[in-house]
Image (cartoon, rainbow, N blue to C red; front, top):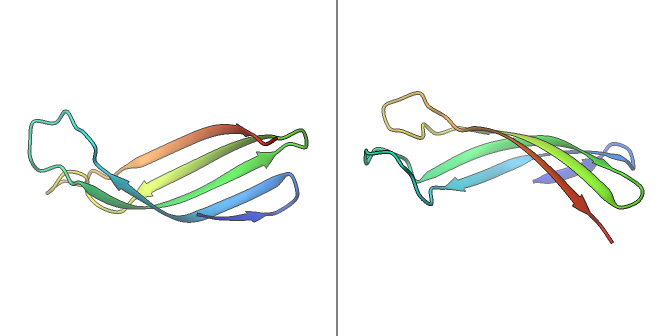
Length: 82
């Protein structure tokens, strides 16, 4: 992920992301174990150390063979720098 600061308070991030299957509850052996993804997001970096970020992730591979099912994820996070 690359992060570009548009302003001191606002950042934009974009880049590749990789997903590996750890466990599943599907009764078929046709579930993929790896997914290449693209991610992009925005972050707000407040002056007192708090940061809030949101990210959208889109998978490229079909997660179940012979279907058109792809991963799509929205992530929200917060952090504190000290």
